[in-house]
Length: 439
Image (tube, rainbow, N blue to C red; front, side, top):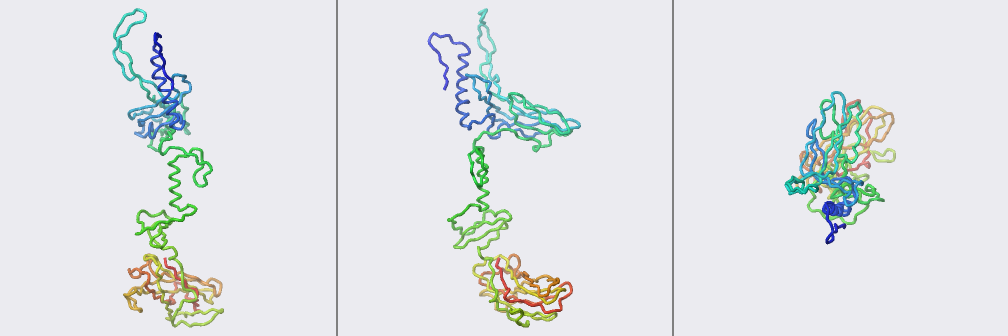
C-alpha cells in the first residue's frame, strides 16, 4: 500500500496533501476491489445504472455503483475510477423523427465533481493580501451521463460510443411515437461477478454449459432443470414419501417418480398418480370367455363366431389387481377378423362393476358402455384387427362409482351395428388375444 511520506523541516505543497487521498483510492480500487470483483472492468453492481422506460421521449437510469478503467491515469491517481449516483436520474431524449427510426445510446464516464464549498481565509501568493474566499473543500466521484442521438434512417445503425465513456444502453426511438416501451431498450452493461453473477469454470462439463466463466445463477438453473427431468445417471436412495407429495406437478410430457410404502409411483402433469407396473396387461390364453357365440377351431386357434343380426354374447370376469391405483382408466384389447374383403363390423362391450363386499356377483347397477368403432374390411380376407375397448371412464369410474383394487368387472361382448354396410360374414373373435390394461 502506497503512503504519503513527510519529513521534519521539509516543505509541504498542495500536491503532497492531495496525494493522501489519491494513494488511498489507488490501494482500495486498483488493488483490492479489482481482485474482489474477479478483475472485471467497466462493470456495474446488480441493477446499478440500468436504463428503464419512462415515456416516448424519456428514460430513467437507476442509481448505483460501478467502476471504470482509465489506463491513461498515472500514479498516484487510481486507474479504477468510481461510477456513482445516489438517486435515480431522468434522461430526456431528442424528439423522434417524423419519418424514420433511429437508435440512441446512453453512456457514462467517471468524473470528479465539487461536493462541498466553504468560505476560507486565502492569502494571495503575490500580494500577500488575505481575504475571504469561497473554496471547494470536498470533491466526490460521480458518473457523467451522455446521450448520443443516432441518425434517423430506414435501417438505423447504432452510433459510436464516445472515447472515455461506457455504453450502458441502446434505445430504439421509433418514428413519430418515440420509445415504444421496455422492449425498445437493450441493456449493454457488464455486471460485476457478485452473487448470482459470479462466474465459475465449467470447461469439460458434459451436461452443463461449458465455459471458463459461466454464471453461477445459470448453473443453478441448469442443474435444477436436469434434476426435475430426472436426467441424473443413477440413484440408489429414494426416500419414502408418505402421504403422497402434493406440492407441484411436473411439466407436460414429464413424469415425477417417488416412493411410498414400498411402491414406486409416477405422477403426471395433471396430478394423476400410477404405481410403477400398474399399467401391465393380463389375460391371453387364460381368458375364460363364456357365452353362446359359436366356438370352433380355425387356423389352429380357438375362435368364437358372432353372426350378423344375432344377439350372441360372451362374458368374462376380470379381477382388478391389488396394485391398481383408483382413478386410472381400465381398458381391454381384443382381436378379431372376418373372411370378408369389404364392408365393416362393430363390437360392443358392456362392463358392470361388482364391488368387493358390496354387490352381488350378477349386479348390473353400475355399468359402462363402449364400442370398437367401425372396423372396415379393406381388401384382405381374414385380416387381423386389434381394437381397444374402454371398460371404465378415463377417470376409472362406472356410473360415477370408482373401480377399486379387489373389485370385479363383468365384461359382456356383443356384435353391434356399424354406421356403414354391415358385414354379412361371421366375425371371428380370438379369446387368446385378450389383454387388460389397468391405468
